[in-house]
Image: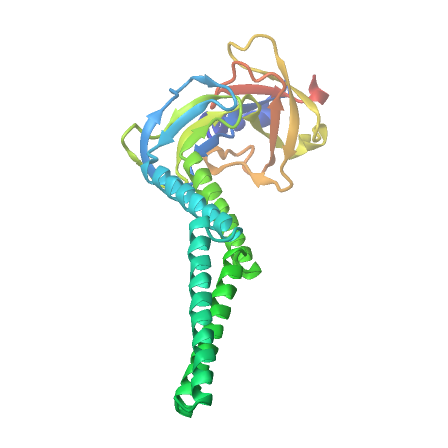
Length: 314
């Protein structure tokens, strides 16, 4: 918010006839508008208008129920993904391995029985007590038993191994994604509580507790001491008297002794004296906007009139 003063325009109307070299001006401020990047209902307002705050002091808080739930969900997803990654880095559990080992023993027993039966069948076939087709069937049983044993032994070897590299890589990537999601949700949650970025005076509070605050809408306006500045206009004829970085003398009612201010900005383009103060004497005169920052801003208030004396006129 910028403060503009009609009294300054009226005072400037007579600056051309001011023989003591004093230029009228006024105090203006650059406010720090503090807002939250997310919308929400205002549940806490920790400061009042006019209060002095230090950096990091809490200013206000918006409702955070949804963000807390999102953070908790992200934390649960992270725990799940990390557990899956750990599980894939190991083989099966002992009981599962024991079950597969039992399948190997069973397959080996079936094979031994089939092989013993094959020996008897061959003896009987030699004596022509068993047909050739019966012998062939027993030979196939032995082959099937060997295949089943080989399969069970392969499953036992796999049971002792961790998951494939690709699966472990995918699980690790899922864990990193879950960590990032948790960090993001925690950051969003933190944005619902807003602290003062600088030491300042609370210039205004713009919402009351219970009101809905749109995203990015300022809730508190802060006025840091260094953001107080003086604005005045220098007639074209006196422009050579002031340069950026110069010290000017500033006085005001109730401010005590004149104080110093450093010129920070000089407009590069002239403007005509505002129409509201046109007169026969100055309607054609050009003026240049000048801004200066007081070295001691204590006691200066927005909109306050001041008298500025350039260095060449001191």
